[in-house]
Length: 308
Image (cartoon, rainbow, N blue to C red; front, side, top):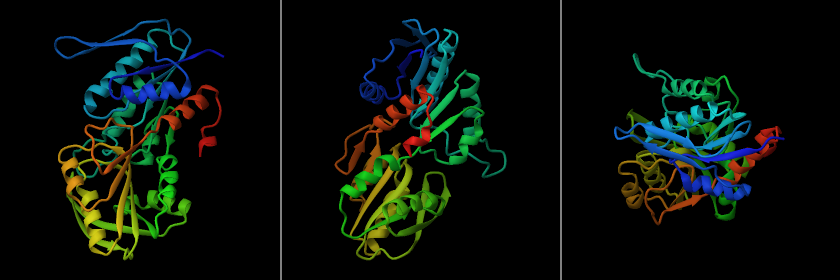
């Protein structure tokens, strides 16, 4: 069996190092520089002919730079006669633009999928897509790993006295229901009205949270407006505690300040995106083991379903 090589872009090198350590591998030496005008230049420092390449690169902020870096890396490996090129994209950026919600707007998730394929990538592995149907935007295999692989054990280890799962909106009910079924907990829904992007207003709590330890489940937390308002609303309805498990800690703009000042007791995220600053309310779990296992399974041509 031909060998495989792990490659890290600049988006989250610490995460790539954790994956490499889990697999007992070294990262392939790749030189990534920029021309004076900001264009990205890549130089692979060793032969990769015939090797299976795994590029670990979330397309988090700065999303445009990290996406272009991924595409240019893939092109460099394709032109270096790599056997296969696998994109490990723990956080898939542009996923929120997955459908037309108004006239004359793009479907950016589909555009990014097309660019990834055109660059010569043969397979994509990602964690908690914003919308599972994005897998259908690709004509190559997509392995969609779930944040529940991380959070289920953590939630159970908390030994909460009166736990209940909450969906932060109607659109997240399927994800929250999956957690509730696995844990054997009941489910409530936070009904909100979103006026525009990154602005939301909590309207109503569907279900009883009096005396409950509430666990909000979501795929990401960005500006934390929805999350902190949901926590405040849940506490106002009598919740004893509110913990949130959100796979991707985008945490842009006023997110850290909002979390600090909110009624939220704890925010648990994965390290799919590097954390910009420490916060007493934020707990980070590593997804390196599930990514490492996925790489081993893909390389061995086994079924990814063995992970579920």
